[in-house]
Length: 298
Ligand code: SPD
Image 1 (cartoon, rainbow, N blue to C red):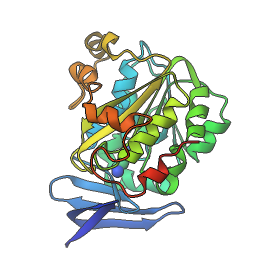
Image 2 (cartoon, protein in one colour):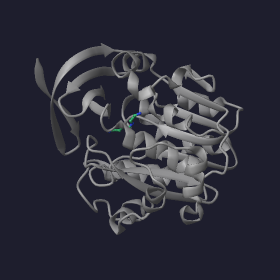
Image 3 (cartoon, rainbow, N blue to C red):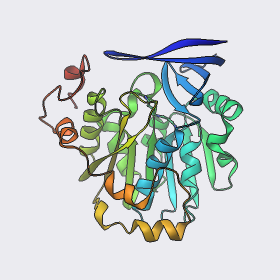
């Protein structure tokens, strides 16, 4: 039987109709899986939609391929979060990747995703190159002595277990785990209705990296649809990346990402530049109560 459920972000309520298939309370959060007529199975954490069977490809392709295509031959990748396995699946499409470590805090999320939405990981967790750890990603980044060519922050929203991923300390620690020339990419929220999340992520990344850029994708089940990612490195030159050659050589099979999207996604509207500006106006677009207070980055 279907029911209506809501995703509430400050100032907005998004209402979905779906059938509740599974509901669990883990140590960290409330986990629900719904079946939606258009988007298939939906993973909802603490009432916030994280991924759906029908549009997950946009998010996972853009989080994985944009940074990895920017590298000549990425060998080692760290994924922080990403319990559904979608990011890992796309990372492993790059043939040069020898090792991909995924550190997910909540094993229950992964268990339920594998049971109800196995197509998202599509076996990636069993790949010989994958190392899956159920641990606190923040502690892992702080304490690890490993080095990676790319770090991908596949976080939930900045509430609950994901909150500590949106801090300058975390970004500084992550920068210390990168090999020379390495790159970090993170999901950074809606640039329209969660300006504070994007502003804060950009500020945190800028406290640890010389070059930080935002790129965008359209994800139907995320608030505001237009979604932001933040990429950070010593130098990012999206226009210099030979995306066509690399995509062909790597045999990437994608539905959203293309070499053209790789370049175009960094051409963000002026209003997005205003959202990430250090002294930008507090509300350039939409309204997020409390964002003025949350903006201060120490
Ligand atoms: N409000 C949605 C934010 C979701 C970001 N993470 C999604 C995880 C999918 N692997």
